[in-house]
Each structure stands twice: as C-alpha cells, then as structure tokens.
Length: 386
Ligand code: FAD
Image (spheres, rainbow, N blue to C red):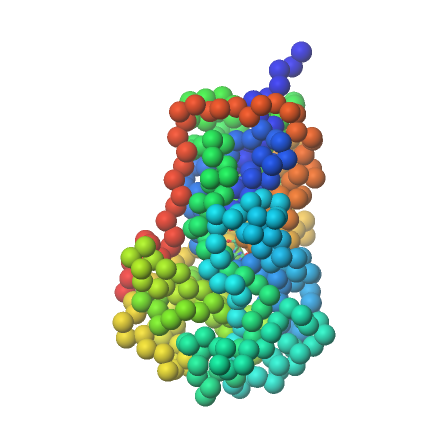
C-alpha cells in the first residue's frame, strides 16, 4: 500500500500568488506547506504599486480588450476580502487609497472626456469637480480633468503581514530540491524530507529554474524589466495615472509612508519603461523634467530620488505572447504558475483549485521548530537616495 503524502499541496514562493493560494487552500480544507527561499514578498510583490486594476488603464486605447475584461471583477473581489465577506479574510490588511485616479493634461481633456463619457466605462469612473481634486493636482493651468476609477490601491506591506498571519504554521523557510514520483512529489528542504500530493510553484522569476526539470522550453516564461523611480519627501498624497497621447500612462504615481514617517512617491508608467535603458542618474534627470512639465507648481526642493530596477516575471502564452490573465502550466503533479498581476492572484488560485484533486482530509501537520521566513523590506526602505 502506498503511504499518503505529508501534505496535499506544497507551494514554492511566498509572494502574493503563493500566499493567496495558501489561504484559499487552508479554507478549502487542504493540508499545505509554503516554502520561501528568501523573504516573503521579496520578488515582485513588494515592488508592485498595489493597484487593484479594474482594467480601465488597459481600455484607454478606446476598446475594452481582453486584459481589461480579465480585470473587471477584481476590485469588488478584493474589497469583499478586505471587509471580511470574501473568499479569504483580509480585514487585517488595509487600503492605501480607496480609488486610484486618472488625470488628463489640459491639452488632452477632450479625448479623455470622450472616453470616460462613453458607454464602455459608464459606472466605473467618476469625473471629479476641481474642488475634489487632490491638493497636488490643484494646477488648472496644466491639469485638465481628474477622474476617480473603480480601482483601489492596497498597502502591500500590510497585505503581506495579513496573509502571513493567515498562513501561520504552514509557511517555512528553505530552498527545496524536488523529485517528482508517481503519485506525489518529494521535497528535500532544510534537512527534512517532505512529500506533497501536488507541488505548485508560484516562485515568480524563480519558476524559470524549474522549466528544464519539467521538460518545458525556456520561452514558457518571460521577464519585462522596469526601472521604477522613488521620490523621498514627496510633495503630497497622490495615487494616479497621468495620460497623454500614448495608450500607456506617462507616469503612474503611488504614495507610501516610510518607517521614518516620510512620504514616498513610487513612480511607474512610461517613465519606468524608458528608464530600463537609462542610468539611474539619467532616470532621475528625466523624472525631474517630467515633473516640471506635468506639475510645475510642485516643490521638490526637499526631495531625494532613487531608481529601482525590477523585472516583471510572467508566464508566456503557448505562442509566446504576453498573457492577458494568470498562467498555469501543469506537468504531472507539478504546476508552474504566474498571476501576471497582483490583482489577479484570486483568479490564479481559482485555476489551481480547479486543477487539484479533492482535499484528502488529512490533518495539517505541525512542522515543529522549523523557522518561518521574514517579510522582505519595501523598496523605499532600502533605497540609496540621491
Ligand atoms: P513574486 O512576488 O515575484 O514572488 C515570488 C516569491 O518566490 C519570492 O518571494 C521569491 O523569493 C520566492 N522564490 C523564488 N524562487 C523560489 C524557490 N525556488 N523556492 C522558494 N521560493 C522561491 N500588479 C498589479 O496588479 N498592480 C500593480 O500595481 C502592480 N505594480 C507592479 C509594479 C512593478 C514595479 C512590478 C515589477 C510589478 C507590478 N505588478 C502589479 C505585478 C505584480 O507585482 C506581480 O504580478 C505579482 O507580484 C507576482 O506575484 P508572484 O507571487 O507570482 O511573484
């Protein structure tokens, strides 16, 4: 008789995908173990801007494409978790901003107004009167219109702490060696041998190391680099995209509070995509120029700046394209997975749960004195400011 594995599911990687999946599995009665080889959130998750996109950013090319359709339900699904009525209980997490904004430069107001007035997005966007604009956008010479999107922004460090608490006892530190067997996967980790009915890797860029072992081609995964900009002592609170003639935001700004209390702007969008080919000094110079053009009345005299390089690690579609939703690749009892966006972690967990056999009903093992991983620091806590 074959003995039962120690756990139904082992998960590799404690970013948003692995931690969300662990919480769903535990609620559904699966025994589970999540292994993290560095620190929770260390890959992309703490580097993300925490925006729970509803797809409107991807619809600005004036059609609701597949990217935006995949995202449309996400804000409501996350909000339900945050108020305790959703699929997992995230009442211990918190929002950084109730609604992400979208500001149009004065020169572009009519195109944007046409889009936001269209039937496509009705009910998902509110045009704000000027007295409702955030203080940093009160510049009528340069800001033409401000819209509030049906998209919230999460405090990602608080989210990670909440998810780590939900998974307490099932999250352990270590780098596993994996040996697939006929009806389970054996893992050698931290001086122990653990067996799992199914192994799900949610290791972000770390998934790439498993491709050869699973006989999958290297192009099954892809990376898209960014050089994000950080602004210490930022001039005020802002969570917003600024749109211009491109269908990508010129800048996407989120605000974070450092442990020392200072406000930080974390800036993505085209600035960060163009920043990939730039030195940090050139990125900072480009950012200063961009702020002088977009919001010239703001005072950055007390601000310090830093660049932060990070790759978006994603699965590729079978024909090598950028995926529109989460990606799951299965070889025997091993699954490799990528949420594609933080916002889509709930959809990835749906895919994994649908592909798993039912929970065995075995009691969740206690793993004794095996150490749990730390939560990684956010990029703004470790930046070298210039
Ligand atoms: P990761 O967060 O990369 O986590 C992988 C984890 O696995 C890490 O902790 C790593 O240490 C661990 N690991 C690696 N190898 C192993 C191994 N062998 N064994 C054990 N552990 C391992 N999405 C949004 O929806 N909204 C946003 O606003 C947003 N902003 C973004 C901004 C930036 C700059 C970037 C880069 C991405 C952004 N994203 C955003 C995308 C989002 O961050 C990612 O899609 C998401 O965080 C991926 O989560 P993950 O858990 O799959 O991977």
